[in-house]
Image (tube, rainbow, N blue to C red; front, side, top):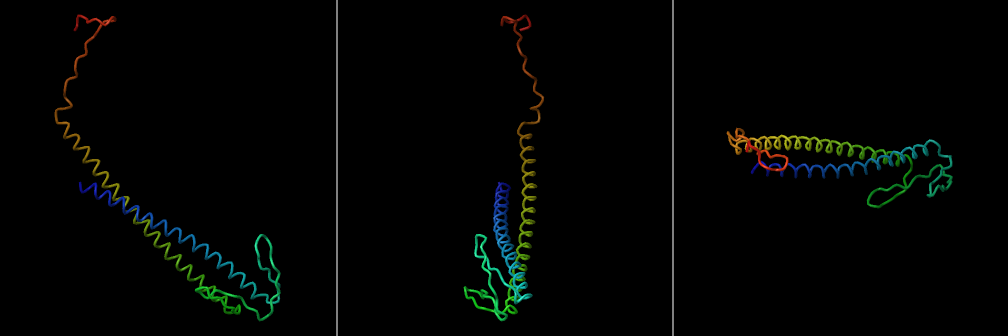
Length: 173
C-alpha cells in the first residue's frame, strides 16, 4: 500500500508545516509588539528633542509618574546590547532607535514571507492529499464492485410465505 504510506507522509508534512507556521506566528507577534514599543519610544525621543526645556514625566507604574526637569545637554540611557547600557545624547539615540525599528520591520517582512510560503506549501500538500485520497476511494469502490461479481445484482428475491392472521399457513404456501 504505497498510497497509504504516501498519505501518511503528506499528513506528517502538513503537521510539520503547521507547526512551523505556529512558531512563525508567535515570533511575528513578539516582533510586532517590539516594533510598536520602539515606535512609541521614537515618538517620545522626538518629543524630547523638540522641547529641551520642557518638563518630562517618567511613568513609575500604577498610574504614577515622576516629573523631571531636563537640562539642555542631558541625554538618555540606551541599551547598546548584551545588557550594556550607556548614556547618549538625543541626537545619537534617535538614529539608533530608528535603525532598530528598521531592522525589526525588515525581520518582520522576512518572517511574513516565510509564513506565507509555508501557508502556500500546506495548501499544496493538502490538495495533493485530497487528490490521492479521492483516487484511493475510487479504487476502493471499483474493487468492491469487482468483488461483488458481475451477476450478483440479478439474483431473485426469496419468496416470503404468507400466513393468516392466526399465524397458520395459507393455501398459497
